Image (cartoon, rainbow, N blue to C red; front, side, top):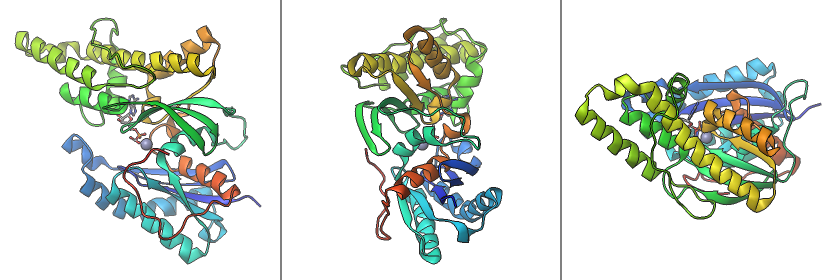
Length: 339
Ligand code: KG4
Ligand code: ZN
């Protein structure tokens, strides 16, 4: 009999639930919160309220799609942090009550580790390749940009990270400057497909070691556009695709340059990407090129497991379940953390 894990994710603005049977995905349901688009970013109080509304229907749908009843669950895993505290509290409270009501173990998951462990979600036929340890993971999301050596499922070491903005945040801020909707990353990605990435150049950071910096790039985009708009108020409209392609290329170049440096430094050529920005087509194809030219083994998650999802929480829960690493009812959510 497989071990059924219910995963719950509510760290930001997606309410998500998923069921795994051991490490195999059974269902993966996400309710996106449209409400934030009109504010140009996530409004924490509105996110918590929407989680409250969504959580029961989303969990119900995940169990139904997996075709199991709640009584068949072996454990419930939830995101304890990092994230927005009000959002995390909704998922955490539900998970705690559910585990207590069903008398099954409660498992707490670190959201950033879960993005990486998304690579271990198996499809029904178990044919998808999974990375072998140790591997190097570039985690790029709305709030984080990290280079991580993954020695085991829960033995992870950050060897580089951003000293200011995250890669996803940079996509979102650049989009906002151009008047594009939130979240900007997917919009920039789409428009970039039609544009010339070599048309405009923006400043790249010179941060030592394996750390990243994106705040200079953001300022460079802001000043560049401010000057061009003085000459032509329709500059952005006329050059939208080229601007997006050039910005995307700059962000991807910054990421891949550090990744190459990390490979040289560690000697690890088993390479994965994770997090919302790993959905970016420029990053995905840049990595494919490096597979060819450098001979790395690369692991790119399916799109459904790039942005926030509960499948990654459920599979992480499975690996903790195997270790009997259970959480206490008194564990409070945390807004910030490394691992
Ligand atoms: O992992 P995620 O869903 O949430 C966090 O944990 O932060 O990442 C969200 C981030 C947002 O900044 C969003 O703009 C970015 O991922 N993103 C993308 C793409 N899809 C999502 N950035 C660039 N290209 C994309 N296709
Ligand atoms: Zn995330």
